[in-house]
Image (cartoon, rainbow, N blue to C red; front, side):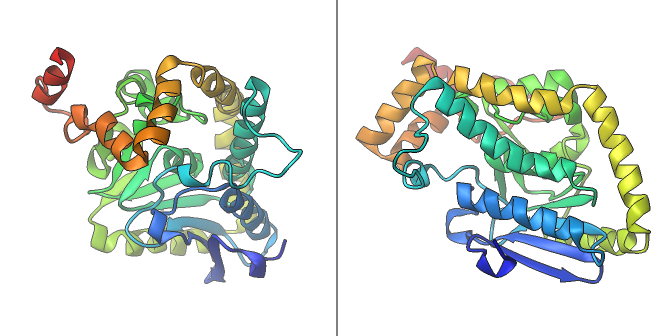
Amino acid sequence: METADYQHIRYEVEDGRARITFARPKTHNALTSRLLEELEHALWEADDDQNVHCVIVRGEGKSFCSGYDLTSIGREKREGYRTGRSHDDDIWMIEQSNRRIRTLMQVHKPSIAQVQGNCLAGGTDVALACDMVIAADDARIGFPAARSMGAQPGNLWMYHCGPQWAKRLQLTGDSVTGADAEKLGLVMKAVPADVLEDEVEGLADRLALVDADLLAANKRITNLALELMGAQTLHRLAGENDARAHRARAVRDYGRNIRELGLRETLRRRDEPFGDGFAKVGEPEGRNNLVRGARED
């Protein structure tokens, strides 16, 4: 593959940085197998390029990434190859995506996630694998798929915001704003949306002043600490756990509802009982009448 062959991302090198832009704005940059393959290739290209000191990962349009593209599932399968239907097939395919995302942790060059709009489900897998995350303060960050589709296949949340908030968000599928994500340590910094790009580029300017070998040494020793805490092992095992969660009755019901009702209506019925779907940080949440009413039904 050559950079000119990319279909789902754009790649450019300028002023000591590589910019990798998810280029599927009509789907809010939903992830496909092809996109992740291109992301992996672009990351190794940037890591090999001596003109690059850091990598910026960003999304075109209104969102960073809305998660995996559910409409592409099944369309990218090749005859005679794994389908994802067996338990082992499921694990294999999740692990393939995880390996590609884990490249963000393995390349020597530091990476910055530039997060605006929706950063949901698989989008959080990508963002949290980056070395630093800068978000718009009104971004929406969460994993609502945990309500119906399985468990987090990457699951680096605990290493950023600790076990209690990781559970609070994972168990409910609720989201937080970029501003609240900063309070939790889920992102490094949140800024107004209109200065997000300037903030990210400013950090890239500073990294461009530092010898790339020194950047690599300091990134890799910090990531080694994460590895000693089990981050890469957990990232791999989370795929097996997600495949286990796919056997839940709720996941089977969700798939049937998509076939019978369509994706949009199924998502509406899933998420409506959760109100606005946001967890509040540092303030009381009280009881949600929509949730209580749904339970009484």
